[in-house]
Every structure is written in C-alpha cells, then in structure tokens.
Length: 548
Image 1 (cartoon, rainbow, N blue to C red):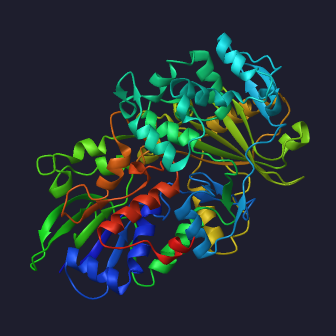
Image 2 (cartoon, rainbow, N blue to C red):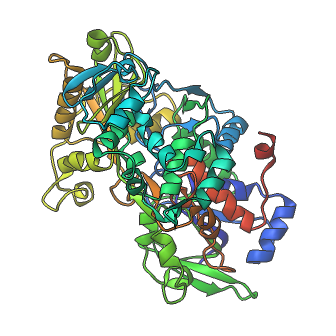
Image 3 (cartoon, rainbow, N blue to C red):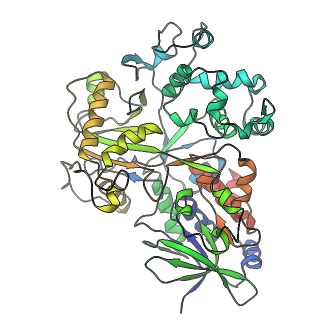
C-alpha cells in the first residue's frame, strides 16, 4: 500500500529544504492551523523528493583535490547584510561567514582592446573608448568621481527625477505607481526605458562596467530598477567559510531528525486524490518509483522544471486551472555561467600584482574573480558571465545532438583532465561533498584553453602557466533553465508574489523558489516565497526572524 504523508516537497534546493525544515519546527498552534487546512492528525509527516543525487539546487559549493579547504561557488555564492531572512538564518544556525571583496582600485578593465585599471574608470580625465553623447560624457566627466556603471541610474533619473534618494519601501511604492507617457511602468521593458535617455554606446559601457548584461536587459522595468537602485550605502557581500551549500546541508541534517529526503526521484505529474476525510490530497507519479500520496504538495522548483511537468492535474491542467499558465510565463530564466580554473601558483599576483576582487571586460569572459590567491601555492580564478556571453561558452558543450545537452546524452567534447585526481581523500563529509561537486562538473578541454587564452588577453600577459584543474556549470542546462529569473514586462510582481505560492485558492498545492519572488537572483527570494506559502498554511514569522 502506498504510504500517506502530509507534505511532499518536490525539489531539494534552498526553498525546498528550508520549507521542510520550517514545517518540521511548527508550533502546536501552527500545527492546529495546518491540520485545519490539510486534514489528518498528529505530528507532520514530511518528505523531500529530489531528482538528482545531491541537495543544493542552484547552490553548488565545490573544492578541487588540490585545495580541499577552499569552497568555490559554482552556483549562488553570497548574501547581503540587508537581506533579513538569510541574515537571520545564518545567525540562528551560527554559520561562519566572511565579507567578500568585490571592488579593488588596481584591478583591471579590458575594454575594446584598451587596458585600464578600475580607478581610471571613475577618473573624469580618462578617455574611454566609447562614442558617448555629449550629455553622457558630461555626466561621467563632470569633475567628480563618476562610475560609468551609474549611467543606467542616470538614465532612470532623467525619466523620473523624483526617484533620487528613494530606497526600500518608498522606492517600490513609487515604482508601482510610476508611468511612462501614461503607460504603467510595469508594462515597460527596462532596455526600452533606457533607450529614451541613453545611447547604445552608453548602455554598452554601463553594463560592461557593472559586469552583468542582465542588469541592462529588457525585463520588467519596475523590478530591474529596484534591483539597481536599492543598494544602500554600507551594503556588504558575505561568503560562507564552508560554502553556501553547507547551509542547506545543515538544514537538511536537522530536518532529517523527523523527516525524510529521497534522492533520484523525478516527478512526472500529480493528480488530486480523495483522502476520504473531506479533504483533497495529491497523488504524485514519479518516473521510476512508486506513487506517493500526500495531503499537500510543494513544488520547490525553478520555472523551467515546473513547466517540464506533464500538464495534468488540479494545478497544471490549463482547463482546470486556466490562470496558472500565465502565472508560469510571468518570469524568464536568465543564462549564467561560471568556470573555476586552478593554477599551481597565482600568476595574476606574480605578473600583475592582483590578489582579490574582480576585473571586467567586454570579451566573452566578462568578469573574473581572484577567488583564492595563495603565494607560491595552488590558487583559483573564477570566470563569471551571463546573457549572450553564455552562448559563446555553450558552444564548447556542443556534440552530435546539439548544444547544452551533451552531458545528458553521453556525447560531446573531450574533457579537461585534472593533474591531481589522485590526491588524498577529503577530511570530512562536508569536504567530501564539495569534492564530489567538483569532480561531477568536468569542463570541456577546449573551453578551458579558450578561457585561459581570454584571461591572458584581459591581463595582457603572454606567459601565464596553464591551469591544472577546472570545474564549471552552465545554469541554462536542464533541469534549471536559468541561474536566476527576472519578471517579464506586463506583470505586477508585487501582487503575484502573494498569489503564486498558492495559485489555486483552497488547493493544497504550493509553488516556492527564487523564480517567482521579488528578491530574484538571491537565496533571499527563495526563502521569501517559502515564508509566504507557510503563512497561507497558518505559520507565522519564527522567533529567530523577529529577533533579527
């Protein structure tokens, strides 16, 4: 007989594990509220179903054998001190973390085959190789220190002068009501808005200096403006000493004291199911496993993975829930790619005197972080790019069946072989997990060689030693369909963020994850949607959040 559980959580990423962990900690009062909605009695029976062989989702902390104590973030890598949920969770779990250095004045900018250091970009006397308008040029050469990346904000303030100085709630309230020629701002693409005040050359300079093409993309103008503007003075980036994914491993370990995590369980579809006690539950049909009956289902999946499910049942059948397809199309997955290269010594310090932070360029490399610089010993550099640049690197994945799917089909290019595959075994389970993550993400050899070539071009060196190890991930690959997501024009994200966690009223089917949050691109967004879904079940803000 098929087991009956209370909650089937599909997806072992940040939102799935966090949701399971919080449900397992429900107070007696919260449990009474939950039981009124889903039926049943007694302690909650909760299970997580993950299709892969690891917990983590789009968090992917890895370490090569040559640097076993250095976590390298092939997926999401950091959080901000002004993100309340993640910050409070880190404090509650007492997870060791440290501040990340991003900007360094002597780091490089390689722009249109001209070499600059970062401090020159904010020097009004620097002649940048872009054909800017007189007004744009005046902005970045007005006698004060003007960062060219601020051209995006400058263009927005040309449209909305009153936006200057707005932050947080005040900024969002303004954007929700703003109009462009009588048209609500949420219906406008950000690139379309920029084009009213910023030349193509100005936009190219700005997004190159920022390092992220997506921050100048044509997604919903409300949400990109909020992302660009809502960085207050004193905002800090933090990395985890053991890796971001280790936070989920800690949550998963605590959850498993009362719940279960099942690996290798890929959901095909789910239908409603009569529980026999006046409540409707769900029957989950997995590809290669027995069915599971649950009183409630939580889809803790990115947009692409939800859309890949069979369109049947009370939530995904468009005839039964006609409002859901439009909700699922409200966001777009954003391509993002990371590649770590390991060298026997940090040539970027030895040849260029660079040791931390990042450098930027307009070639497909786009930006690199000097991730781990160890004098005379193994060191790591991270290449990081998004949008169209990822298609360049995606070409190195191409095999007989086409790009982006060669790993799954067993075809494709020769992989770069580590020179240190036979190093000593990892010292503990955390290091072992990180090492497996590294070895599971081999890199096509031609991709490694081309990235090394572009790094030498960017740094204007000709004799850098070749890398000895590498790992990478293109997050457009299945099942993710994007590393992060942005709202499409035409959708009121601030309303949908409350609707999507339970798209069909009264149906115990929930959707959580970064995709449909108002803190997209961050784990904070994933946890935000989890909290909203749990609130619909009657759970309040936990004490550890309130105290923070």
